[in-house]
Length: 175
Image (cartoon, rainbow, N blue to C red; front, side, top):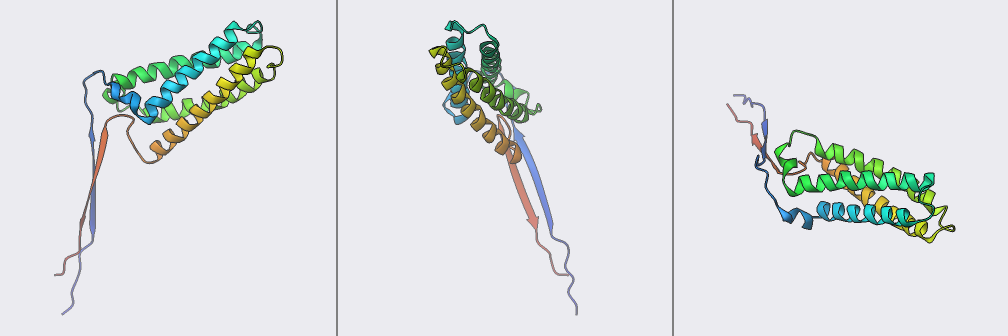
């Protein structure tokens, strides 16, 4: 008597658990992404102040650096507020991680350019040299954040909230 076997069936279900409530949660700032955002905001602000107090701050190099610093400051600051108040979790269908990855990758490149340009004028003004230091530090912070966001997108994570995956395998049975 011959035995016949059925197919092996695997059922995978993903459950997304998010809260639609906007609430303040200061614990985000103690996570690695939260600390990175805080560091980026501080570095943006310090670099901006250095260029602003410089006598050469109105030239094109200083203006480009300040533009990069201020757009980074405001975008990162708004994202930090969104995470602290769980706005990201409320609108989980928006591809937040992809948006953040794109921004962080672009700002890594922009800070490379801006910091290199003001470093070239560091001999004219010490404030440009200090701004270049903060710019290169911000470049590293944005680059590391882009790396983390790339890995999160690749693994299918949510920006905020929980995603649980359940896999059930049904073994073949003999008839």
